[in-house]
Length: 332
Image 1 (tube, rainbow, N blue to C red):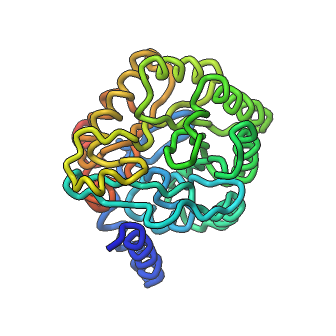
Image 2: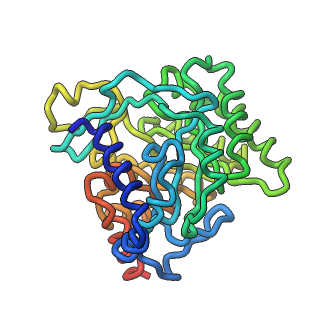
């Protein structure tokens, strides 16, 4: 089945199942692992456990109450943009089963920041799960005006999320990655931080970066994070590299970002580099190719404070969250 269609069938089915009396309690009993030893305090927020759902799975804040029952400590919605947009033409997601990977070129398909904010406002039971808001720019917005899109999303989501993530690293919006360059990135982050600091209770702002950055670019990221005083970094987004892929060459040739197992090593390298280079000056959220508890532990040992799942969650199933939590308790 087409992966995007499968995604909607599964999430829709979960939504329907969740309406049955006792179903959410059943899911929680099967999958969730709760233990005080899993708690983490990172960038001023208390997480009940360090395993989160990465942005991209729940773009429009539709499944938070359902996904929370699987035992996530935090869920990141989005990427959301100011205006609704359909994203890129279909098909735009492809399974590379041999590589335990996905290629996606979704293109920030979402219903807009205001719709997501409306849903989050009326959430009934988050089970202690923290919510992140991943924000981006509309495809039609030129880069010189991109800052206005980030400002709009910041204001729209401010009252309903626990932290923000500035996404300038998706390969699927033309020109977006150019915003990772030093000057435009500093302008966006400084502007958001200025708005944030005027609030009575500022929210943590993180930056999501690409795994394809060079060492000198990563050095710039460290400098920018320290200079703008944002809360931390999410490492990493999907990669445009096709190195080492063994799947059907026709699939491998599809445009878009690769996620999953092929990203495991590189994402960990980026985490370790940022942690070492900055002398652990800021928290890092590790994401990319986590398909086992060992993969998660490796990222935490490399310098991550928290981890996020997406492709590994799809391939390995919801039991992966509990596996990671159980291993963390063993290692406590």
